[in-house]
Length: 74
Image (cartoon, rainbow, N blue to C red; front, top):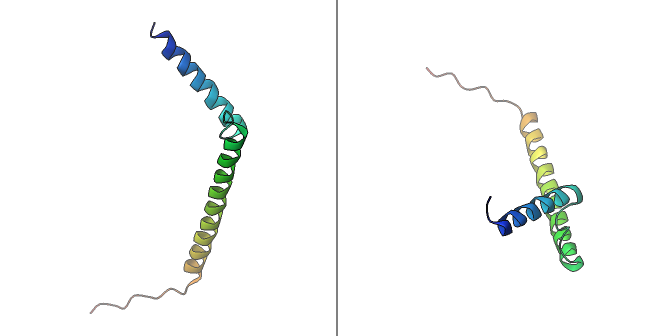
């Protein structure tokens, strides 16, 4: 059974999650707030892209660096 108000809330949240998964974050927000959220998400994605490129470049430099053979221990 359960509390009818709780059941209704859960169904609403499930529907909202489906819409957000399909249409992007902030679908239910008013236009001004949705634009702020979309700008923040875009900024975050851009920062991730830059960080990923820097990591990729560092990895390539490390791979291309000459390998030094260890000195034998006597």
